Length: 167
Image (tube, rainbow, N blue to C red; front, top):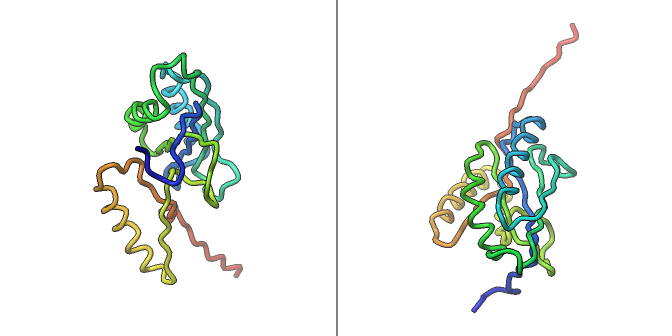
């Protein structure tokens, strides 16, 4: 018996987000995205794949893919089966991760994420957050049944400081 607020549906659509290394150029991100698309198009259950690199997010090294599966009577796999078999094939692309989730008719939540479920960790002290977030993520990744664990803490980009002395 499915447990949860609303049972997950097989609508025949996937919403995918790409999270790349924070210092990756747009050109390199585009190459990674094209590799993701090529791999996905080889799956017999997929009818169409479209997407874009970059976007309106403040995260520069990200992108989105939208996938339409063939009608249910023309495929021998559920949307969940497709996600599970693509996960391993897509993991070979280094420097970027593609997170897939089945599109749902009813979405509850205030913001889009790379996962169906989210846990928000907050702190008034940035040092505490920087210490505990990776530790909690590491422990959660050990739990059975959790796949595609990720976070949106972006603190690994390149930074340069320049002091300009006009004299």
